[in-house]
Length: 71
Length: 138
Image (cartoon, each protein chain N blue to C red):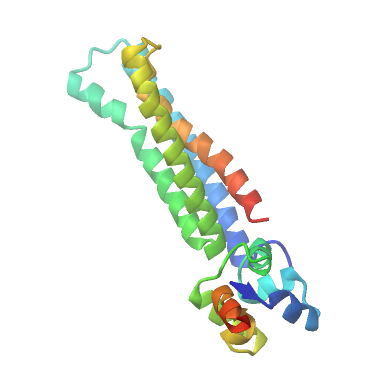
């Protein structure tokens, strides 16, 4: 699963630690999600969306769906 | 405040350390007491009493497990994933390791190993696995 977490965070001048603080998770969690090594659960994805004031689809995208759209 | 872990997890970590140290000390005290009563006190104890005393270290060990589980439940989902994977790897390696060694013991006459080493092996392997699983997600 791809995400725009790093870009959205940079737009707001938030560090990984700032975002982790807002989400009440560890900084390592934010890093693992940003690098695509860990896909968050649905409740955490909703929380992330709430923090950025966006919908889940505006932050996360399915790899297969993106590939199908490109084809 | 910005930091590596949120306040609630840091507080949970502090509680975990204090409780684990407390129950760890209690465990050691119970083990020493049990060994002294059974082997060095000179008391002629009935078998059922020896069985009961032999089981007493299990009680603080179970409390330690409860302390650990409480701590894991207070972690965020990512850290819970790391813990789950680490235990899975540890259980798999120690399980297959002891299973394999049992064949060597039985057929190749390797030295007998005490079952008491299984749990420390699990914990040791869990520690190692945690290190490598964490690295994989970095």
